Image 1 (cartoon, one colour):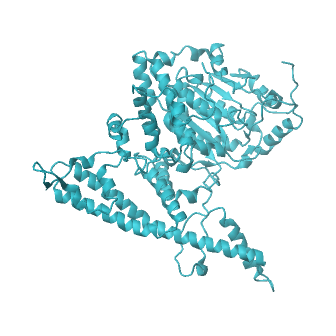
Image 2 (image 1 turned 90 degrees about the vertical axis):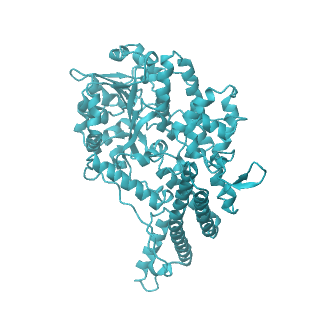
Amino acid sequence: MPKIRPPKVRVSRQQGALPSNALSSAISAAMVKRPQSAHQKGTHITSRTLCDDIIQRMGTSLNKHSGCDIIDILPGAGLFSSKLHDHLKPRRHILIEPNIHYYDAFLKPLVEGPQSRYKHLAWDPYDLTMYSELFDQGHLPEQSKRPLLSQGASTLNDSLLVLANLTSPSPFKKQKAGLLVRYMEACLEQTMFHRYGLVRVLALLPSEDSEILLPRLIMHRKRTAALAEAVSAEMTEIAGDTKRSDWIPSKGWTTFNMSIEQVHQRSESSNIKIPAGRETAPLQLAPDLGVYNRGVKHIPRARSDWQEEFIELLERKERNKKVPGGGLSDIDFTRFSYLRKRIMNENREEMAFRKLAPELDQIRKREADLLSVLKTPGSSVNKVVRHAEAAQEAKQLFDQQFEDLGRQTRAKFDYLMEEKGCFDGTISRTEEPLLQWDRRPYDPLHLDPEEVWPNRPCAVVDFQPNPESPMMQSQKKLAQNKSEGVYHQMIRTYLHVIGLVTTHNVKPFAEILRLMFPGRSMANLIRSVPSLAPFASPKVIQMTNSKEPMNILVFAPGPDGKRIKNVIPELAEYDDNCFTGVKVRNVPSSVLWDIVVEYESSPGRSGDLSLALGGGKLGPDDFKTN
């Protein structure tokens, strides 16, 4: 490679000596006359205070990495790299930065400082063979002395930490957060830097990529989020642009507030402190129309983006009142009236939703009570009928009110209830919320876009792998039996199956099961995969959806052919319609793994799962890692 003279930029060895605006100016100056490069520039933290607040927020969890090795992917100007370095005092700090045109002037003082533990390698981190070469070429000699995972159980490797700036455009065109996705897949495969143990990753990402990893809404739970759930003990957004709140109206006011309350409880119990200026941006509420609402009570709720236009028109209308002949133009007044009517309709919808939601909760409770009675030995016939009638009556009352809503309003209510059901576990069948975002230990520190350069919404995400995940438990068992090949085949299948959370997001779950297990009854499959049972509705629940009298539940043929009054035992069993209403995106990653384990042990499984499923995995499927 010809020697390239980097731009002259005066940079202190202690990058933190530069204030945020000065470091931004220094980076900008380095970019002005940059030569052509195959590598795209990224976004970089330029605020010392932000670095300090992030490290403080991570607290004692960083202690276990004191004196570790650091692989630093695309450190760029290196401010956060140097701050974390000073805090952890690592044994070795490998800077993987190919953009020497831009950043050599920033990194050189770190590498050439007295007793420096930094080493700069101008390698391409998107060349996935690079990670093996770090070990094979002796850049991390202490790591290579650890036993390979394939020779033992999957464990955490706290002696290695990965710091990654993933804000530059990814060559994985189809996949947002592509490199971090590969890191998570490698966690399952025990390749790349996970070959000697599972490694923690701190990543700087564009906010939109962070929201793919940690979706706020169940409709946005796709393959990447399902993979993150599968491999992480924690996936936490430490800092981010908290002004991004356009998702809150779709979350539902009740579910959003339950999530916030639980986060505050977790934060208080862990004594989490919020530095001044890092508080979550205040939530903007929908406008109260007051007299315009025609006597309808205002329902507090989050403001939607489109309501900003109404507020601007209303403020202009009020200002112009003070001017003779003032007001709104005809065009603006027509728009103002339309938006006002839309807000009024939304208010009425919210009122209906908050009335119907508790009734739906009551239906689910009565169904659970009915199943409990049915499965209790010695339950009387009359008791079973009473509980069935109570469930049926609640459903019929709910249906009457639900049908009075418009088609779009019904669809919106269904989605809000799906959000709530995946939060409280009544749909996802989880003890904790399905989305990792709703399980966060604290709210992110507010990261102002002006604290990075170029200014853009960004987030810092902490990925901590889970050695106790179902996949790792399977790996341990198979390693003991020297059956690693079986495990890797299961992982390939699993990566296809979790791809369905993207490609078949709202597809009925039962259709996927029929494709994977043709010819098998759902009852048979549930017996083999017990974790499926909570998602299935027994026959008795389906029967309460009908208008038939519930005493039909307790009549069965007698020995003389006459019908006798008795509880039919098959009522608690499952038929092939038992998964009606369950969507692929509602199913936890752990249950998908259980399905894969059963699939791999099935003698009649398809030779080409991808073809059978219509294509499952998205993104860089076939990159080879060692």
